[in-house]
Each structure stands twice: as structure tokens, then as C-alpha cells.
Length: 414
Image 1 (cartoon, rainbow, N blue to C red):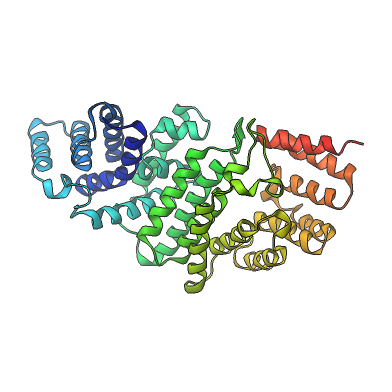
Image 2: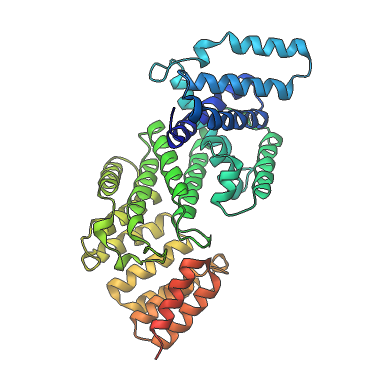
């Protein structure tokens, strides 16, 4: 008998491999993905009770193939032929872990699936949902719970995403070389979005959703294994590790937020920090510089400071200045303003922050007001800071962030 956690991890590892086998065989991504999901659900029920089969991937391929046959074959003769093909292909599917002659294809399949799930015809939310389901092996219900939406809503989004891929004529193949860099950029962005939603939940009662950060790191680690020479892939993995290392100290027992400057750094994950620092040091030394590498370098400077007061803000400011040139965005400007304030004073940070007031991309978010409140507090303007903290609290849909911001405002009461 195997534990549910062990089975869950194995199923997530095997999900893209099994889907790759089916899509190469049948060529219908949408139907194959449904069949694999049914096989994964069957395994999740049976394996904890009966034990993991000797050849788990072959088991899943066989069950999914039968589901696929049931879905798409109406004629009994045609059905028998498909089942005969499945039964006659042991070299392709029924192979023992660790001695898998098809592993190169399985690795290629995982990368191909990531590119397919991040197809440019899909919206970012659809890319995230489909990646978690097809590559991450999560069920629709698990994806829905992760994002605090009804299962039916998430199921509709995933269904529409698969139909969009079908209508776009996308094939189960690597994109042409001229498109790969852009498609890889989207894949990295999707994994970053998954991580961010887990690290600071955009809504709901919990600050963090650790299962999402764990899944994003797992997928980023797999992508790094497939593309070990890509500096931005290494940079993303380093960034996720260095950021997630602080997670144990980010909240109190009651779930309330602890800001970076007040965290107990002895609770940070030293092994994750060491791995992240090694990754980003290697990437910066050998690869063309990119935004994820720069963000990872900034995270490393924070993580290597034994105390908040030891933070090398001048180095962080230089890195943000470079990041603003390489990949300008409102979020980069927001963080750049904080670094500028720490080096040259809060007024300098507030002046940079003011450049975002007319940026429509910041409309409706609470972060601009939260950062402005922090810099106003540093400048000694407690009345204005209190007002901005409260404005930020009204805009956020995260209850822990809301309570934190209201608490900051209350502390500034005369």
C-alpha cells in the first residue's frame, strides 16, 4: 500500500508523459487530455489501496487508451483494432521506471505540452489552468480550489481553452525555431503567475497557497532539467526558490502577514537559498542577462542579508535600474521606487512612484497605494500615510493583506 502523497507526486510526474504518448498516437489533444484525467482519477483511487503497479506509466497509458477508445470509436471493429495496437506496444508504454527507453520522448513531450498549453491563442488565465491540468496533473477540482472559483467555472475555462487550441490548428509538436523564444517567454510567465498566486493569494482568507508555489517550483525545476543551458529558465527557478525560502516566516500562527523587514530570518529555508544562489550565480556568469536573472539576483541580495539592516540596498538599486532598462513594467517601477527611497530618501522614491499615477495598468490595484503609504510613513507624513494605507486596504481582496494594511493605518492614529 502506498501513501496518498506519494501517489499524488508520482501521478503529477507521469501525467505529461502519458498525455504525450496518447497525443502522439491519436492526435486529438482535447480528447486525449480528458482520457488521461480519467486515468489519473482512477489511479488516485486505486493505487493508495492496492499499491502502485510495477509499471505505473504503462498502467496509466493502458487505462487512458481504453477511455480514449470508448470516447472516439463507435464501430466495434475499429475499437478492437485500437485496443490491439495498445496491447502490442510494450516498448512504448509498459517499461519499468529507471529503465525507460522512451524517456527522451517523454522529456520532449513535457516540453511540447508546456508550449502547447501556453499557445498564444489562449488568454493568460487559460494558459495557467491548462498548464496545471495537462502538465501538472491536477484535476479540474484541484485547479478550481487553488484559485477559489467554482469547479464548473474552471471546467468551462479549460474546455474553452482546449477548443481554442483545436480551432487554432495547433499540433502536438515543438513550435518552429523562429517562435520558440517567444513561446518559452510565455511558458516562464505562466509558471511565474502560478507561483505568485500561491505566494500571495489575490483573494480569500489565506495569505498563501503552498500547493501552487510547490507546483510552480516543480514545473520550473522540470523545465530547467529539459533546458539546462537557458539562463532565463535557471533565473526563474532561482527566483522561485529564493522567494519561497522566506515563506515559513511570512505569516504568524493566526495567518497574519509579516513584512520582509520584520521576518525571523532564522526560519528561512537555508537549503533553498543556497540552491537559488548557486543557480543564479552560474546563470549570470554564462548566459545573456534577462529579467528573471535580475529578479533572482535581487532576491539573493535580500536573502543573503543576516538582518534587514544589513541589506545592500545600493546593489539592489543598481539591479532595479538595469531591470527597468531590460524589462520595464509598472511592478518594476514600484519596487524600484522602494529601493530608491532606501538609498536616496523617501522623497526620491515618491517622485518615481508618481510616474505611475497615470498608468492605467495600475488602476484598481492596491499595491501603488500601499507602497506610497510606506514611503510617506518613512518621510514622516503620518496623516497622509494613514489615508493611503486605508485606501490600499479598501482595494485589496486578500483578507490577510487587508488586515495588515488596516493595522498599519491604526498604528499611525494620533
